[in-house]
Length: 233
Image 1 (cartoon, rainbow, N blue to C red):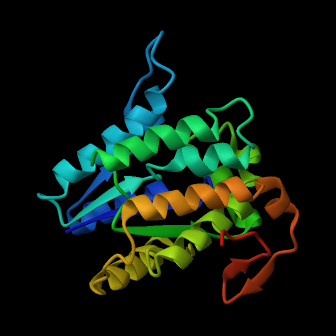
Image 2 (cartoon, helix red, strand yellow):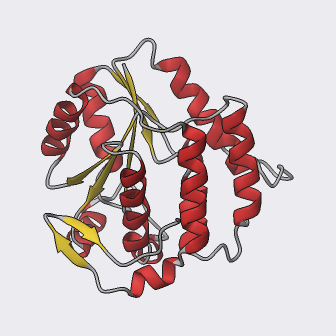
């Protein structure tokens, strides 16, 4: 039994892949914060972060009764999402770091067993957005700008913890599912603790600017992205 997370750009097919998997493989889906919870007036500034922790706790509860528990979106999303916008108008890196680090130490949150990062071309993303009438995707154009830095973040995560992230060229839901199933058949053990992984990701975010990554010449290597970025010594 595994807790997995699907990530990728808006309209890439995370939710539809999750639903397809739920119907066929006894999976339980935990939607993203804004779909799962309703924020009331006067809530604490840490509400969104707290709800990410709650999503993780739900996953831990449900995965005992389901073959796969799927987090539709990364529970650590505020770390890389806010970074993509240089933390302007969002929680600061310091406040996010203090919150998540404490929650990891207390055992309230952990990284999923595996990440599956779905990607496709910008042209295909636009087509899928137009064909999907079930979601408004009001921030679609804005979110297109963080695809490169988001992928760079998850590639670095995969360097720290090999095989934690599987990159999938999202051609179809059936293809996505086939790759996920095959990948999960391979048993993986974590090389470093969640706290060490988190600390090194925070340091990487601190040392790199998303805007600089977005403007860096991107090379394609076997469907994956590489770019010159700074790494912690």
